[in-house]
Amino acid sequence: MMNLSKQETRINNIDILRGLAIIFVVLFHYTSHYSPNYLLRTDDWTLNVASYGWSGVDIFFVVSGFCIAMTIIKTQNYFEFLIKRFARIYPAYFVCGITTLIFYSLFDLPGREVDWITGLMNLFFANFIPGLNYQYIDGIYWALIVELKFYIFFGAIYFFIKNFGKAITIWALISIMLNIILLIDDKLLVFLTSITPHSNFFLIGLILFYFKEKNFHLLFLIPILVLFNVFLNERYSGNELYFLFLIFFTSIILITKYRFKFDLLSKIGLLSFSWYLLHNAIGIIIIREINNLGFETFSVIIAIFTTLIMSIFSYNIIEKSWKNKILNLYKKFNH
Image 1 (cartoon, rainbow, N blue to C red):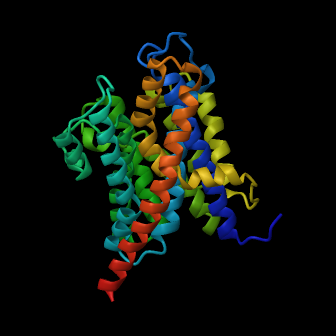
Image 2: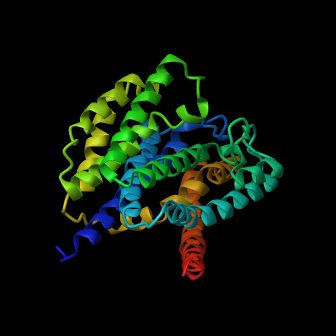
């Protein structure tokens, strides 16, 4: 095994998990989530094993909690933290959102398209404001709003408390409170409770990072929160054992010192954010159009490769480039 630093090993394993997560999600949407009739298939084909692929989003949330912990402890203040998150997310979100709107203008996706006005309101995060319930550009973008709430709320807690362990404890209490509210009335405090049950998965990532760095004495919270989360939320009903295994597996990969050698998965992990934003609406449009031409055998494969290639361009031309430009601009004005 290569003599890599702990940091390099950690980042490699994070990318592997992201690669697995996005593959789960893509296969779920392309082969299980939509009915064969909606996909214009004549053979009623679905891939039953992919029906669990939606759980890839929860892997993303655990990894996100871990990565935010890595970032926030090296950040000077709350504003800098938000700038870093903005630089990481917004350029790709904007370009992928516009690309999806263009596809809506050129092709049909019945019941799922949004108009340009709604799309632009999304791109300026108007649907993040309570009471402004704009339809997402793509239904899967809900996860991005959940991520944003996590960044904003946990970041505010951490920089107010200035103590990482205490910030995690407060986030744990908030997560438990929101889960209880959700059980009592899922319409109460929708803006806040919509982050549950995912707040618990962010929390697991935070705890795993702090345990690895500081011998975190609250490690016992992980199994308690996992059990609380999985068994009390309808999202995981009927899949409890599967989720317990998935979270255990994800946790082991994050905290191990062993560098797993899955270079292809690591590379896919780097593309995972752009691929997530591009794959669903655009991929389903591609599948429908190709199926409509009678080439059902190849439609899923073509959709996978087309959206993957698009995500390669997005990552290299938009994500990396504009992230660096925004951060360099921030540094220039901050000194």
